[in-house]
Image (cartoon, rainbow, N blue to C red; front, side):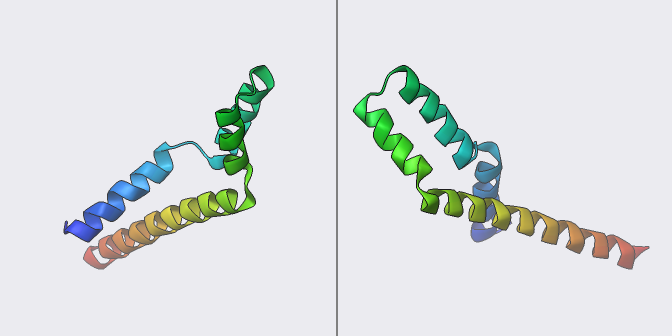
Amino acid sequence: MDEPEASGHVWREHVHRRGTAEQDRDALARLIEYDADPFEVELYELAADPRTLLIDRAQRRRAGQHERHVRRLKGRGRQAEG
């Protein structure tokens, strides 16, 4: 595995392991309800920004597309062998 491929693999693994932007937003909203400190409010505003949500969804879609692509390629390789 070359360096760009390894880097992409690490990035995709990170995308799948982290929580979604919606989960972050909801958790911060609960914190703000309990104790609205200015830093938490700022984080909530960032997490609730529509651009943040769009970017998170796009990253998750891209990681999933790549995984499906790799599975299809492996499936074709097995069919050619059989």
